[in-house]
Image 1 (cartoon, chains in turn green, brown):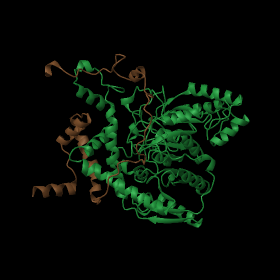
Image 2 (tube, rainbow over the protein chains, first blue to last red):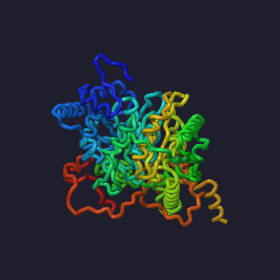
Image 3 (cartoon, one colour):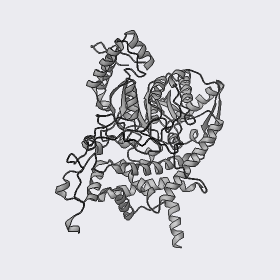
Image 4 (cartoon, rainbow over the protein chains, first blue to last red):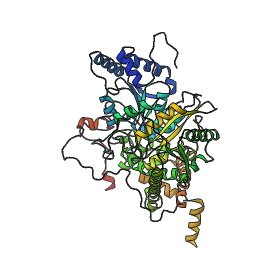
Length: 493
Length: 113
């Protein structure tokens, strides 16, 4: 993918399995891998994917791992795997800012459980990546650190909010990255960038150390070039955690060992209203119907299911997530950490004005807009009409989901209505931006796992994905299906 | 008449977002907006509220609101002191500290007594 430099960078990356085989045979080293990615990161700096690059410590750890391997120590599950984190995931003694001015000088004092587990399996954290402020956005243009560019077409956005993490994998700036997905923030950028992006079941991965946006929606998600890498990362970071009581005690299967077993003939559903939506790009619609024909020809049952709630899912999502955000973001007060308005003494601010000034200067516009809407739906006189109403709709959506998975093994949808937008295209219109999430918010509202796999190329030169969802905690099945379909139906372009 | 008028207006145009509402929400959210920003947030809120007003079309009578995403009930642990951070770590990121406490502006003022 990249032209050879004069420094003999012979490193190529296919998958963790191949990389480990190459490490064991002596064909490559962890140091060579880290050097390769550092070189790529340097060459692709203008994409603005990374906020911090931990070059020195990544090289040190790589050298240590190479020495351990040479001494005969067995390989950790993610031995030497070069991983980037979204700037909402805490890593002890490293900066994390949620791409916000309000956390501009913040250094984590502990690591997220997911990060602890990556490190315990010998992963190398190479840096943290740009995103929309507090993960609020679908284009990565709402960042205090500027926009991220899509590496396939630099006039386009990478999607959001985990745009930097997606581009880090897309542009070969790391092997795997972690993002977070509250309404599609892993699946949609994966779709826009032509890579794999998984949002697991709510409660599969600990949220400890993930900066909260909307706690009943947020899940850490995984970006990779292929499904087996996602499976291996998931089995490393998933599972119960004493620091997050919402994590399920459900057993974590050995996803990567079972990934190649082929699901036989399946019953697959799609939402009729979604595939018939006028908002859906014609070519995407045609190609997904084409895929449905192929699935049928290959012995699967594919049926349209009525989904009468399509027009209500994004409004429900915005009522509930902004309510949770307005509460979660109340912790940013300029006292315990984060941005504090300057000259407090000189201006003789009262405590309340001190809070207001610090918060108003520290948060960006989209964040303030969502805090205001969230405050509105939770305020006296409007609570029942908006917040309770949305919780009732969420209940209806969960019931609908249970009905679908009583009859079907999987649900397929487009990941997004269009391919990647032009930079600036959606900036002026919050509603147009919110509707970009129309096919992804469903799985966050209902807690089910969803994945975007890069099956297609559009005639406009951009890739796009197919979104697959299964019932809660059926990730194994979801990953097996994804692996199979990637091998069978991926359009070479 | 008055009630019907309000209902008609709500139904057709959604909530009307006025200055008083914006000011009250800003107060509750501990945010402030200057005059120019106030006009923009008023417009934005109007549009966002109109957008979520769509939920009124759905009949949800008798539906229990969904309160928890997780099936876990009463997740307990042993009552042992652990997992806390040291004072040094706790104040490490504080914008104003004397090393022991967080510093804030004077809360009780003489001239307000």
